[in-house]
Image 1: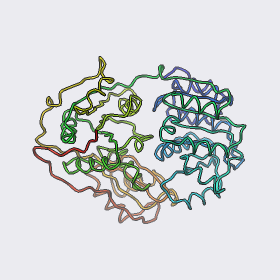
Image 2: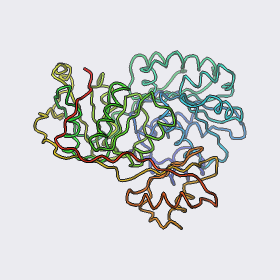
Image 3: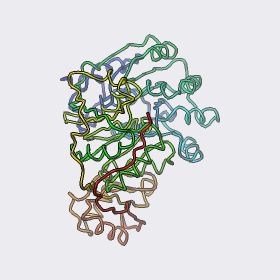
Image 4: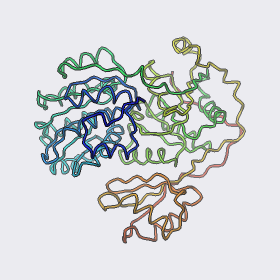
Length: 475
């Protein structure tokens, strides 16, 4: 953090009041370094790590010059994944609370094309989306960028890694030449330099990596036979006792297989990967974020942009492809001054590759030193209750909370995170109170109306003795 208050910036009184209410006390390094230039309409390349506050940096810049009465697309924010686009859109809506009638649309793949077209027909001020789906709407004439003044590429390095360069170039071909272009990236490789040269005008490079506080992470490396990775994973969990864990695998098939194996051992685990439909991805992410699931097993692509506030452990079930991927992965734990644990598995055939990871602080321990697990269970503290009503039904979090703490008599402390989507709402309920909450919502009313309700329930499995399970790691 810096000691620079937002009040030194030429932001409106309403905006300053709003960000104060959101808990923004002072600017982070990336905000302090970039916002003065962004607000002066300069093109900027910002190198900053995930969780550095970059969304607010470009978000406040976009909103500062937005003309609400001009109901045209004035800003486009491109993201590498649906999850990051959703996260950015949510943060933009929070930042825009002080400005009435700002319409922000999320345009990503994995959901029906028609409803997106219908939303675009009604207009928007800001589009947040993935390159492929945005390009499809542009090519079909559903979306126009002729009034666009600001283009943002968030996590640009990851978009290039994922092969989006052609789609990005085609999207930009639809945009006005006279515009502000903001490029945010965790790394600054040669391909980012080349991209900037082609799409930005006299861009100012700002690097805040050195000024950002390092995450407090204990890093462990364990050598393991390829057929006993899941067994070692369970022993590692039992040893470190984290409450929330993100496990990285190399392939989509492997994520599902590892999650299924963990569930079979009595551990609450879900997988997220590219083969899931969008509604399935939302179901998984909501449960993990609201503590209804203890372990999320994911690929790099699927995990990019996840909004996880407190993650206690990251496990590399497979060695990351490079040092940059390793840094991105483990950087999801130990945030906001908290301590985290990162564990990486490697096989005897991968020992040579591991030499690049050795340093004076990383611990290369003997997996045999971890005690055998006689019994394992890991149940999440909450269960997610789903209500078949959402934003389109004018439901707000306070309406659901009121229904639960009013007639249902549920204590506020037993109600967790509430997420409202267009047609569905998700509420986390403490496990011991979930039947009472479900019974009331199934038979009661919200805002004087009845809505269908149901629970995410995974099969109860007994603790397993002498844990052993064939691994699926790929070398």
